[in-house]
Length: 343
Ligand code: ATP
Image (cartoon, rainbow, N blue to C red; front, side):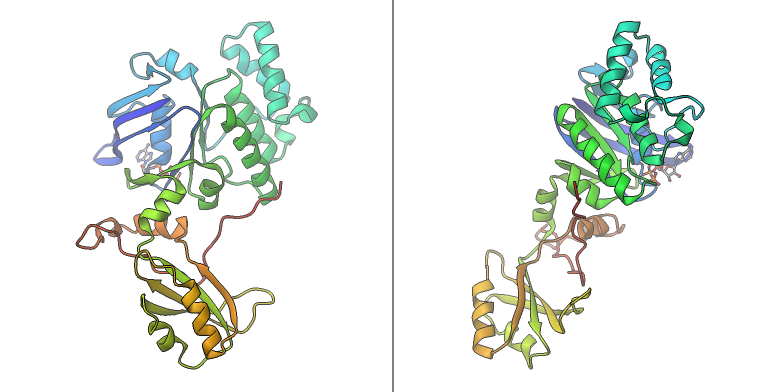
């Protein structure tokens, strides 16, 4: 649905986007993930037709954006990083204005506005002055504007930036619903957002795509050797040596204690194991044998955050081992799991 080939943008001598190529298939929600200044907004502005590329090709729903800009842009709904709305207008009035700008007839506009208001849960505030709305609701008006002409592709640039946690949950829910019916490209630097919303991730850094895949696929590729995380009560003597003595354990690292309310006094270890080995049973048996109280034992999946940090650390992508496999990731003291959202 979106095809990008060799896309670049230079500002004078500086290359903000450097020959990126990717495609987004129909029905996918793809996350464009990168640190500040990576080139996300520049790429998105080119893909939505707001910024001419220095080089490259962009096709949206089969239309070449440079050769057929009107037809291509008709397929795209765009929510920019900073939504500019007319603060003195009422919500419905603003959508009528936007529908007219898009050349919609009266009947089509009425139907499209009704649908957009309903879809973005704006019915209750349709007569409210936009300037008096909360930021979350203004973002909904931005989304309603983006879907007004019923585009097949939605492109959202940092859609939850500046919102409070409750508003973030609500906007993500809305994005998920909108994504169920459309192809969606979403830029963000918020990792949990990617885990929660996206089927696929493109990691962009310094203008280049440094890796891409599903969140699970990226974890699989970058996880290195299987790792177990183990919590033992208290400070069992010689635990590290005994764990290292288990057949199949390559390395044992002591991690910070578990923290948080009610966290027990415990010792935490990370056990790097040989590829293909699941040593949970052996670890359990060793605990029984040694009389250690086992508080927790789990497989330690590399978090997307660790992968992201590693890929954008600016020397990391070359740090693969000689056989080309990525090195295992250093386990953090506490992984940041995706935020659980209350519905
Ligand atoms: P953020 O997450 O902070 O919004 P981003 O990934 O969207 O960052 P861009 O806004 O695309 O990054 O910027 C990429 C690089 O291009 C940055 O170094 C930025 O300073 C530079 N840049 C962007 N616009 C211009 C411009 N008009 N002139 C010169 N440099 C620019």
